[in-house]
Length: 226
Image (cartoon, rainbow, N blue to C red):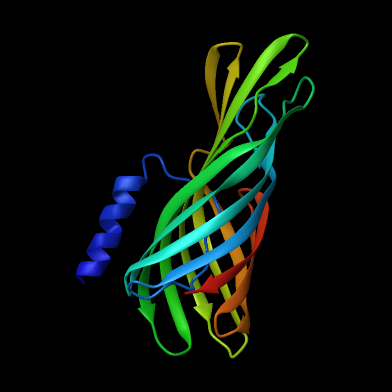
């Protein structure tokens, strides 16, 4: 019961600003255990509000997950990513890849030998190189937020999972030195997550995930257990 109240507290604390990123699935490190992996995450399409069109991004990360407790894990990532923004009127701006990073946590709500339910919070921030268009300097940051609830079924080789998320993507744009935050089209945007962990051996697995409805995105990564 204390764990349920803790989850609700974190949800209320986060709900004023939270929204998308890969969920990491339901495989979590145990207490003091570490997972390390490499991941590619692609946002194929995310609508922005008003006339700001849509945004896409390709990101590559090194991931680290650490088990604080058997039921609570901390997720960190660092790497590089780009941004492509296409307004309703005008030309697409492509910002070349540069620094990107993220953080989050996952809480195990329930587990038995076959099924598991996990609540998670994830955030990614992408800071690509600025770009000049017709002598005008454009700079951008992509902030990607997500709250998720996932359930999985464990088999000998594959652990598929399915769930829903509440997500948000902010495209923060500077024209010369003037800043403007352009939010996703829906402030409270609900989407679906479907994915799975494919076991290679006792210490290695591949994670594949797709995200739908609020955005079109997918991720793939290989992870190792230490």
